[in-house]
Image 1 (cartoon, rainbow, N blue to C red):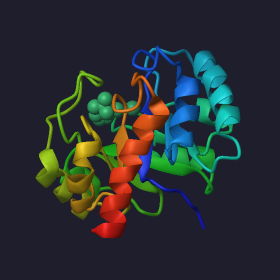
Image 2 (cartoon, rainbow, N blue to C red):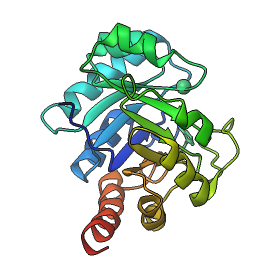
Image 3 (cartoon, rainbow, N blue to C red):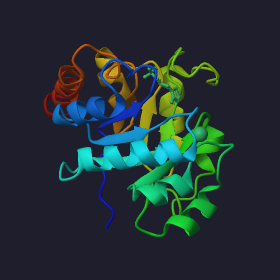
Image 4 (cartoon, rainbow, N blue to C red):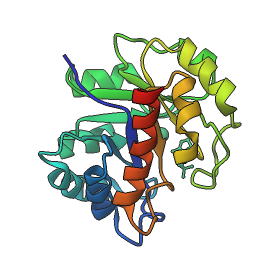
Amino acid sequence: MKLFDLSLYLVLDPGLCARTGMVETARRAVAGGATMVQLRDKEASSERMVRTGHALKSALSGTGAKLIVNDDVEAALAIGADGVQIGQSDWSATDARARLGPAAIIGVTVETPELARLVDPEVVDYVGAGPVFATSTKPDHKQPVGFAGLAAQVAASPVPAVAIGGLKAEHVTEVLAAGAEGIAVVSAICGQPDPERAARSLWAEIAVVRWLG
Ligand code: TZP
Ligand code: MG
């Protein structure tokens, strides 16, 4: 049984995390409740990905938080990461699964219900769904879909979804109401003066929605 928790998913960005650094940001965010951490560094060489990934892996060791690597399946293997997040133009999920084996967590980015429907639940563990809102964090993102579009992607997906794109603590209620299992953020944690506190405020919202409805 593969256990992972999409509730509060931090996606690291080297630029936005520059103030605190990616590894320290991840450490503090996990102390504040982040359940998954994705290393996403579009400019990095595989060597730099692996170096940062190793540092992240030791920072997260023993916390229960999962470490996911964006795009670079070989780097994920070298790091001994828990899994990968792959986009529509990156590795195929089937190739990634063949390379990483059955225990790896494989996430696929979807931007439409049609793409969500194509996901093979035998191969893919979760989808990253969105973008809910426009965001300068990913300048080439697809058309924002709003909460109704998110709900349509979630409904079409055969696997659990985590929502992404311009999301803040104030959006948690609608994200969960749309059927997503969790919220993925970059700027709501990266570059915040206190990443642990930022993660705690997101968790506080999740807890309120989950336990008080
Ligand atoms: N994929 C879709 S939007 C996005 C990614 C990686 C960036 C989300 O960043 P932010 O700062 O949480 O809006
Ligand atoms: Mg990608």
